[in-house]
Amino acid sequence: MPRTQAQALDAADTLAPLRAQFALTEGEIYLDGNSLGVLPLTAAPRVAQAVTEEWGSGLIRSWNQAGWIDLPQRVGDQIARLIGAAPGEVVAADSTSINLYKVLHAALVANAREGRRVIVSERSNFPTDLYIAQSLAAQFGCTLELHEGAAIAQRLRSDVAVLMLTQVNYRSGAMHDMAALTAAAHGVGALALWDLCHSAGAVPVDLNGAGADFAIGCGYKYLNGGPGSPAFVWAHARHASARQPLTGWMGHANPFTFETRYQAAPGMARFLCGTPPVIALTALECGVQTLLAAEPLGGMAALRAKSLALTQLFIEQTRALPLTLVTPEEPAHRGSQVALACPADVNGYAVMQALIARGVIGDFRAGSDGAPDLLRFGFTPLYTRFVDAFDAAHLLADTLHSGVWKESRFAHKAAVT
Ligand SMILES: *Cc1c(COP(=O)(O)O)cnc(C)c1O
Image (tube, rainbow, N blue to C red; front, side, top):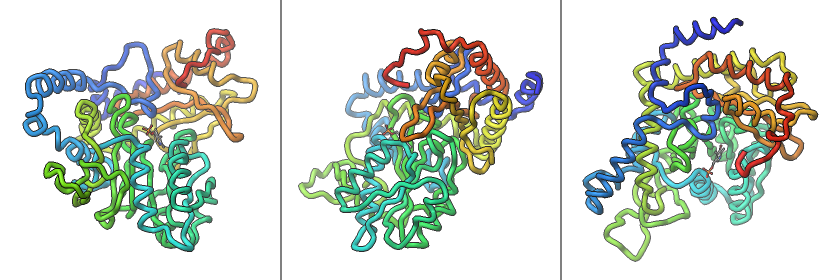
């Protein structure tokens, strides 16, 4: 495929105008929106306004007058539109890890009992999910069982309390069939809990359509909410009276009556804990709005079509390289990223550092427990062009073939990879 063909795809792309929403650096190809989304141009002035006007002038009055107190629900309702949830079913709060603690705890309170004490998850799940599950398994006298691939569904038997999965794998980019696995879990009386960190804003998600039980996800990846952005939490309406363990005052039915005894708020407000991080939620709202801006252009379905076309182009353009494609080629089985494994004689970390020096920003994920080191490339359809996917593939080829990555300056590992 010649580069002109990629240019033609960009010229025909009806989503192309959405790129103008972002503060992108000229000459740089950013393929790490699956780790930290790009700054929306609205965020800096909006956050500045929240700081100088709402905080600076409004001070304490802004809790009411600027609507600070409603931010978790207001931003949650906007996220709901991206994940197949109804208004009132999502709140933005805390981190993914903390929200997972709340919903996994709630699921175990509801469903773990004698003869049903297994939590099933995926061995290659994101570590924080496994760490939180390890802690709760110990607390509830449960066992956490980890499986891969088809063995996950096969393990679903009547002793399983909760199936806890991340829909799109952070390493491989492989995507689970949420509807099928949720149905399989329900078939044996288990609850289905989904982590949407790599799916919210990346692929169409239909939580209510799948009939899932609980979900959580990240604000700073495809939702472009900024570093350390609040996460979100969803519970199906049938779990409206679920009990979550972090019973802080913001989840109380009447926080400002200052009662001695905790009484959970009706609905999703009960999943809140402490005071909302107003500045961070203000930035997250700007990020979520960059996705809602796609609604008149076909929304998540259109973004998904472009994402698959981008990842397909990149897969094809890197096929001849001495790297192994880890991401499933079947479109229904992959999210919005491509992961390539390096052979033993190639230092993947150094390759990524050399590639970043050429202006292509992806990231490196070390393998553990026998899994290979990976080069990871996220394709955010809001701002990635077809020429970016094309150029990134050819700069990667050049980085490998020239051997430039062997220079010692690319070998130094920083704290965050
Ligand atoms: C990014 C990510 C997280 C991050 O959790 P934090 O609490 O925000 O640090 C958790 N789980 C998965 C699957 C992720 O991809």
